[in-house]
Image 1: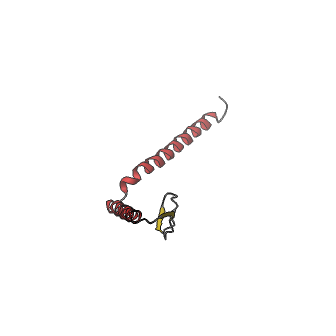
Image 2: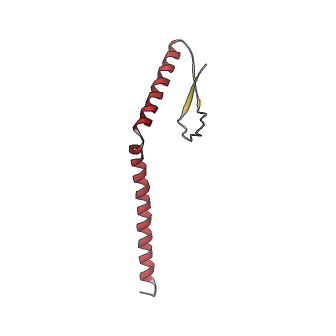
Image 3: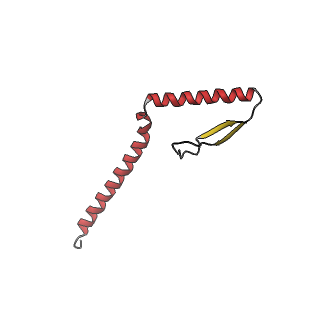
Length: 88
């Protein structure tokens, strides 16, 4: 072995362990995040979805049209699936 090879291998091993730990932490956080969302927030979202669904059904039954557009929100949501349905 040449001078410094053991230190270099040791540092590479530590670097690999730290990268793996960071990746595992990120994955763990992503999977556990929904469980830490407050129940009232989830219930409020579910209620909003049910009201919107009911309004859309009523509009279609009356012969109206629905137009789905990207949401204009104060919170600047970046979710492309978050849309706003307007009645025309």
